[in-house]
Length: 218
Length: 250
Image (cartoon, rainbow over all chains, first blue to last red; front, top):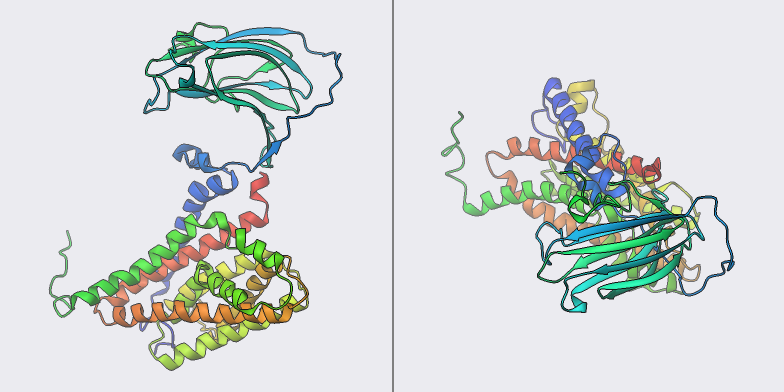
């Protein structure tokens, strides 16, 4: 005799257990494979990384006011001065694999300073090259503080940066011209290079090698 | 290889019945998918609606009714539970009894929760709401009888889970800095809206179910549909527990 609100013929216990187990396994797989990596940036089984779904996650961003700063004019650092030259090859604009753009940053402590000079050769029109000079904090899981130093088009710039907070600071470059180009970035100061693949150097750029070896020995 | 049944029942089916069977399965699938895509919203009241509530001083019945109805119609957790409850209710009288029990349950805790400022953790409440979804799907297939040998009273269960759903509604409403001025009227407006939204959803479910049940293969598909609802319930539980244990801080 069926209870009201139920299927007329209750399923056998074994079937019921199989369905429940299956539902639980499916739910858990979707959870760990998709939802947790995408929503919480939590990927204990690495499934989100395998599927690439973990890229959906983004920390909330807090804009940092870069208009004013109170940093002592004379400062000393423990770390020694370093200088690096980074050559970054970019494919022609509109590249389907998004090889026409990448981000290169370095790690800096608060109030650390670097000077830079970057330029890109072989671009006829200045407005066909876009850059976003910015920095952000690294605190995992927390809201990310983002400071935007300059967003513009142009084929080069010289200047200096004093980091407003601990984090990674650098450039997003985007080639919008029809030719592949090489960006040449020269930096000196008090910073650390970011190992290829880590946050800030996701593209895996190797410093101090010619552009054709910038993505490592291939 | 199994041959597709071409004559059994199917021949007698009018195309629109087939459509309804399809629609019925799709409701389960759609709600499950909706679950996935709208997790980011965590089913709260957000954005401009939240701004509106925070800015409201004094009674403002209609907008709060609208918010209540919207919360219900877009609330996949509440919808899944109602869908599960009416899935195998064949008589309109039974539908009314169960839905009324559910409404009484969630109205009590919605009103009491807001008025007494009862502070319950939203994640835990939502996890139990997920449990209610899984419970009903399990029960729908006769699981309690076959696996545990006992059949819990369904009316008590639906009313009891109604209380939990009401706490869920109360936490959502409380999280919006409700103004004390006009609180009771606005809250009752919200509650009325919840019932209206529930009736709208119920009407859609019933139209689909009535048609779907006429098809010969209904019970076969019904097992799959309830298995899907069961899975969705498990997902809701896991998701809310992940939120409770602070998975985003990992």
